[in-house]
Amino acid sequence: MIFFKKMLRIIHHLFNNNKYKMIELIDLSIDLEYGIGKIYYIFHKNFPDDSEFWLQISKEENGHASILKNAKDLLFVDKFPIELILKSKKEIKNTLTEIKKIINYININNITVEDAFNIALKLEDSAAEKHYELFMNIATDDKIKKLFQKLNDEDKNHYNRLLEYKKIKDLKNCEM
Image (cartoon, rainbow, N blue to C red):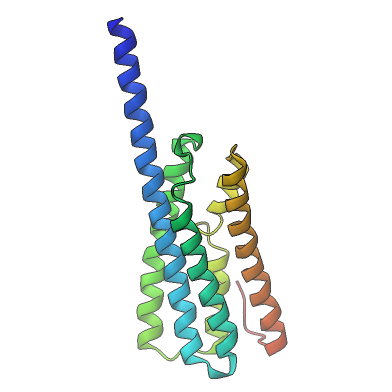
């Protein structure tokens, strides 16, 4: 009986610890979406010829953050392996650090529209943005799977729209 109670406490502790880490990861993901949205909003202000394009993508990034905020209650955190949570957390923190550097850089320097597209393509292709695909692939709950499928599809859509708009603008110096 004592062994059973100890095991129950350990399982409860592990679940709560995993739940806390998943909630922290979701909060970091929300910060990530808002950070990328902020960069696109700066591009919206800095590039009047492309203002509507950047504003739309900025709004969509903020929408991703809202989806994640509203979805926190839906998530069954015990469905996510702790290793994936920790790996994604590190990638997101690294990208958030990079976002802060980018915001500082673009606020101090005059960047070109080519620079803006290079930055945007790099962000949309970052490992942190791809964590939705990892979550989607391991999710067993249909609601969770659909949520991450939507976010993953929208991230891919952003990347493709950036490439397409780059072609329309005939920006030859844009690279990954």
